[in-house]
Length: 118
View 1: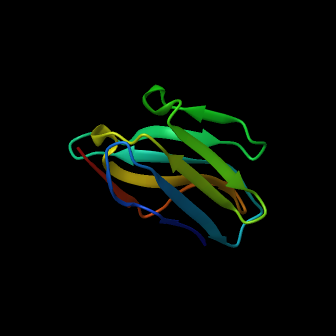
View 2: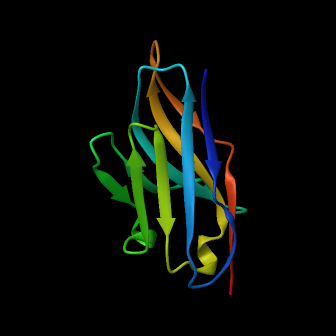
View 3: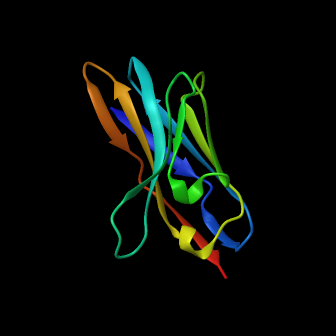
């Protein structure tokens, strides 16, 4: 069983910063690509950023230059540093990971709310 647990969401004023963390736990061989997605009310879930086990990153255009994704492979953790936050960044943020157990599966965290006030 693989679990992803997020932390670090909250309420912040526009222009502020937050750091999200996500820890993968359970029985697995390796954690491959990890990332963050978000979903605002009435919208589809969208990609925010991803990072491979080798450190290659990918960002949505809307967050480039403001958000930074990183990971600690030894701890099976992924982080999202969010700076210069805007009201339109308000959403539930979900941790995502591709994990190898007896097969390669996609796993999601429970989500953490980020609210940016204007």
